Length: 114
Image (cartoon, rainbow, N blue to C red; front, side, top):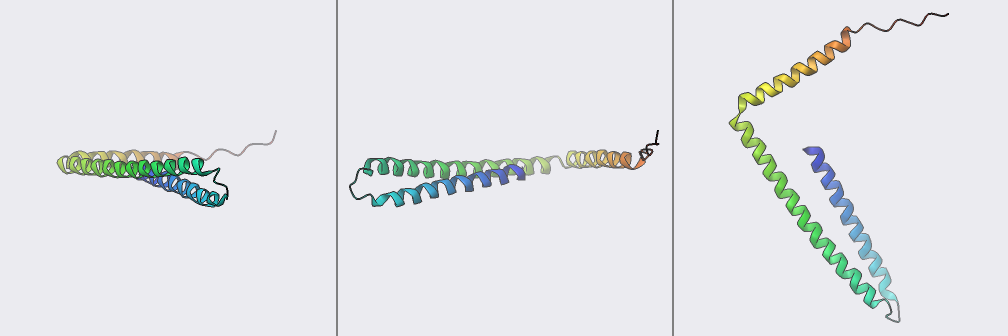
């Protein structure tokens, strides 16, 4: 779950950077003396505000969902402690078998010259 959280945080940060760059670009275009770009500037500004609002809503929803999921996992673990112990032991057993199998394999014989 932490990998998903890290990916979400990275995506959130990247989208915020894009919106910040768009705002900076919009401010740079603000100095067009004759006002021909005013309609475009307004549309871009509205799009940026809309994107920020949606991004904030998505971040809030993602945080709520991750908190709910963590609480559900914690609750399940509290309600089923022996199942958790059994799962942990099973994973440990599988890892041990895999590691032991690697050590027991004989080293490949060196190739003999023809």
